[in-house]
Length: 325
Image (cartoon, rainbow, N blue to C red; front, top):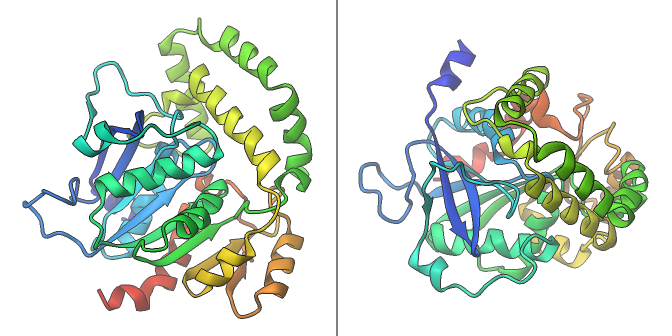
């Protein structure tokens, strides 16, 4: 019954030009244009999901649907891809706005700083200034979320959820020790290998491989992320990953302190990207904060099998806030 309910939830796919780069946005609910759509009553709040790396928004569709359903279908749940992590199919129209056409080009848009500015550019051009926001950042998306709060404190963010947050000491984490040499020193070897292996591969074979992998990961949905095997997108994901290892070092305690009342941190007990000691350190430094340790052995990549559990946690936490809307 629950799965049938989720299938009925409308999800609209758009490819837009954001910061000069084509970007996939998946919009859960009947609202596709928060400025001009008169067919449905405009909601007072947007739930905005910022993915980890790679930033394939299609992976988050089951999570977005679960969250939309658990919040009684009252609010749109949108997920944005990272710049350069999604390419529009040849038959798909790329939408533009006059604001984006006139916007200043974002420097190094595929890098760490550029990705943050990319998300802020989207909010400026596609979300009314008076709309309240719930931000949900996963992995490096948590770092982006903190930086967005820091750079544009006037955003009407009522809550921000940082899921399995990679916001400090990334290269020192168990996975970081492995990823750092690969992403920082052997990045170009990865680029060339990926290009040589994947570029000649027929689209039908790529599609078959991706469908099979999605079945194994319980991630089947209506938006097939062909970009998973696109050399350009993989190169951008590796480039971003290399910057993460080098630049995400010191926790931004000043920003956390300033916005602590809005923040919920959710750490894992089996997370090789942000180990339990990172949770213990931040809990000690901010004992009054809403800083939680998962007790269900949910992995860092929760979107593979634990969408419902994480959506339940967020929906329960939002009950009081949303009842006032």
